[in-house]
Amino acid sequence: MTNILKSFLTRNTYLNKLSISTPSYQFNKYYSTTISSLPQSTHSFDKKQPIENVDNKKYILTDKFNRHHTYLRISLTERCNLRCKYCMPEEGVMLSQADKILTSDEIIRLSKLFVSAGVNKIRFTGGEPLVRKDVEPLIEEVGKIKGLEKIGITTNGILLNRKLDRLHKAGVNLLNISLDTLDSDKFTLITRRLGWDRVFQSIDNALELDNIKVKVNCVIMKGLNDMEICDFVEMTRNKAVEIRFIEYMPFDGNLWSDKKFLAYTDMIKIIHEKYPTFKKYTIEEEEPNNTSKTYHVPGFKGKVGFITSMSEHFCSSCNRLRITADGNLKVCLFGNTEVNLRDRIREGASDQQLLEIINAAVLKKKASHADKYKIQKNFGYSIKQKKEVKHYLLNVIYSSLNNFENNKNNPKLQTQHRNYSTINNNNNNNNNINSNENNEFSHITKDGKLPTMVDISDKIITKRTAHAQSILEFPSNVLSQLLNLENGFNNNSSNDNNNKNKNNISNNKEIISKKGPVFATSIIAGTMAVKNTSNLIPFCHPIPIESCKIDITIIDSTSVKVDCIVSMSGKTGVEMEALTGATVASLTIYDMCKALSKEIVIKETKLISKFGGKSSSPQITK
Image (cartoon, rainbow, N blue to C red; front, side, top):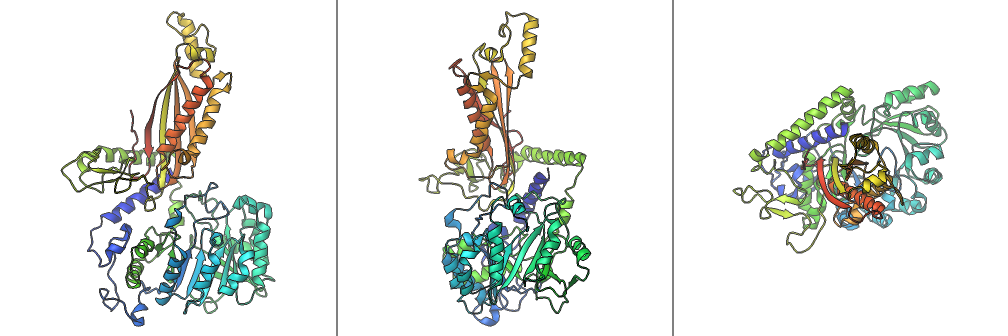
C-alpha cells in the first residue's frame, strides 16, 4: 500500500506540474516536457542575449538562491557488478539501450562546457563507472581540460586495482570506495557477490599513492552493520582515510524501512561510548560545500564523516549538479526534474544553446529537497488506515473512469491504452478513442513501416500490477478420473454422491496425472514464463519482477481456472507478463493431461485488471 500511495502521489504531482500555465521560455524547445516552463533569471544580464564572455559565464551555474555550482557528477554507466541490498533488487534494474548512453565524445564535450562555466571538480559515478570499457582513455581526455582542479571516482573497488595506476596518472586525485562491512561473509550477504578481499586491497593500494584523497563510503543499516561502526572508526587510527557513514536512503527497489534507519546522532553516541574524545572539526577546518559533517579522534591519522541526507539535509550549501548515464541533467539528486542534454547535442545544439539550457535548469533548482525521512515516517499506517487509503485510491480510480466521457477531449485526462503509444488530438471532433484514425500503434515507427520497441525512458516509475485469467474446459468425466470421484459426476448419480463429489472438487488443490502433479508443475511453468516474457514477446521490455502469484482452481466437474497476478515497480506495465504466465500455465495443464483426452480446450485467456501507470483499470473484463 505504501508503494501504491507513493506512485499515486508522484503521478499526481507530475500531472500538476504539467498543468501549470506559464509564459514559454525562449529556449523552451530544448527542454524535456518536465520543465516546460522555467523561471526568469534574477541576474542583471539579459537572458535573451547570447552568453559570449567570461564575465557572463560566471552566472550560468548560479541559482536563484545564489548557490554557485562548481561540482559536477557524471554517471558513466547504469551497469554495476554488485547487487547491494540498499541500492537495487537482486535481479538488477532495467537498463537503457546502448545508443541512449552518452558517448565518450559527448561526455568530454559536456565536461569542457561545464568547466568553462565554472566547474572545477568532476566526479565520475555509475552504476559502477569502472565497468565501462573506455573509462581510462575517457578520464585521460577529461584530465587535460584547463581549469579542472579535481577529478574523482566513486567505485565499489572490485575492478580498481587493475586500473588504479593509469587513472592516477590521468589526474584522478579523489577516490570514494564503497565498503559496508569489515566481515567478508557479511559483504557477500549485502552485495550478493564475492570480492571483499579485492575491495580492501584497493583501499590499501590507493592510500599508498601520492596526492590522492581516499574516502570509504559505508551505508549504515540498523541490525546489519551498525555494530561495526567503531571498527570502521578504528581504521582511522593508522590510515589516512576518511570513513564516511551514510544514512540509509530510500531508492526504488531497495525496500527502504525506518526500522533499518539509524540517524547520524545515534551513530555519534555509539562512537562516543568507545572514543570519548571523538569530536567535530571546526567550521574553519571543514572543506567548503562539504556534504559531510566531519569528526575525528584526536591523535588518529584519519577522519570520520557523516552524510545526513535523511535526518539533516545540507541543501543550503549544495554546489552539485548531476548528469545521468543517458544524458539527463539533474539539479537535485532527490528531484524528479531532468533536462535531456543528450538529445539536444545529437540534434546539433551549439555550446551557446546548451549553456542556455543548463542555466535555465539551474535557475529552477529549489531551496531544498523534501525531507524524505519524514515522508517515509508518515507511511507508518495502522492496518485500518491502510485499508482506508486503499478504498480512497480505488474510489479515485473508479471516479476517473466514470468521468472519462466528460474529459476525453482533454489530452491530459485521456486514458492511455496499452496498444497505443499516443492519442492524436488534432481532430477533437472525433471522440472515438479506439479508432485507428485517432491513434498510432506503439510498436510501429512513425512512418508505419518498421516494428520498434516503445521508448519508456521518460515515463514515471510506479507500482504496476496486472491480473490475467485462463479457463480450461475438460470433456465430461476427465476431471472425475483425475480426482478419483465416485461414479463420476453426472445427472444420473445420486444426490448424496453428487454432493460428495462437489465437496471433493471444492476442497481439491491438486490433480495427479501419469506425468506427475499437474497444478504444481503448471505453476512452476507459468512463473518461469512470466520471468521470460521479454524473450518470448519481441517488444516487451525486460523488467525486474517483484511478485508473481499463480492460483489454479477447479471450478466444477469440467472447468479449471488459472489466475496469474504479477507486480513490479517500473516504467511499463506487466499485463503481458500476467497474460503469458496464465497462458503457459494453461498449456502445461493441457500437456500434463492430454493422455486422457486431446479435447481439452483452453477456452479463453483475458486480462482481468491492471493498476499503475496512466491506464490503470480496476476491472477490464467482467
